[in-house]
Length: 319
Image (tube, rainbow, N blue to C red):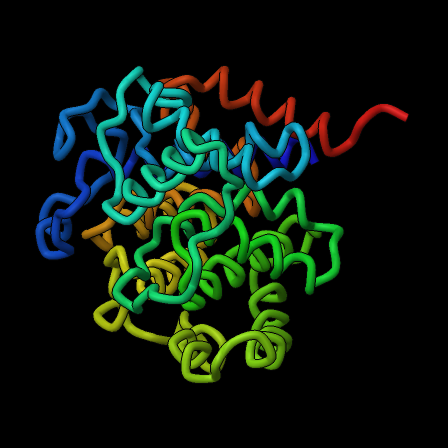
């Protein structure tokens, strides 16, 4: 599984870094000057190969999972990133979502008071708090949960999402993405994984959430997302849009490079859509398919590979 972890983490970070310079650019702008390679400067004035908060939080989650599952420790890693620049690409936090920032401030207060860190209570959370801030960091949990029963997988995805995004709609998005990654980790091709998700998850999710909430994902679960034209795919930070854009791009691709570039060039939340797609494409196509020149300039590439190795060792301790 080590190679798959490296494939996923590097694939995720590369997709993220491709999207960072053009974040918030419209699809129309990118149609005129599409992303074809790593770029520097742009929206956040960063060097080429710089990844964003998406990858930082994925690496923080992975770092915590190296020592087993501990929700409070995962929360503590997020606090270290925001406040002490832990797992930043170049020593600075330059991008963070509003909801995520507020959630980490909550974590900080609980830590200062010596109180147990739990998911944000669902009571009082409204549907406008359904950005992609937990979806973007859920990938490492798929490796940890791969051999667990589906009930346990859902329970822990819900907990981890709930550190920043506890609305059931965000949780469902995280769960679908995680289940997709787990299917790929088991060696299934992307079409088979998608067919299994459409066959199994609607009934399971309707037992966990109001059917109206599950319905928000009907274009993925009841229809075939790949059959929608590009004009019908939105790539905003809204969790449903982000997951649709990711799976639409991934399912329509047949190699890492073209798949991730297609995702980034949808525009808008380019770093997150690129990262989400890059993570799945990394698992599917492997590290060798990621252009070498992209990996070469990726920030902290050696640290990422080392983290993957440590995570693999923790999942498969010597007998």
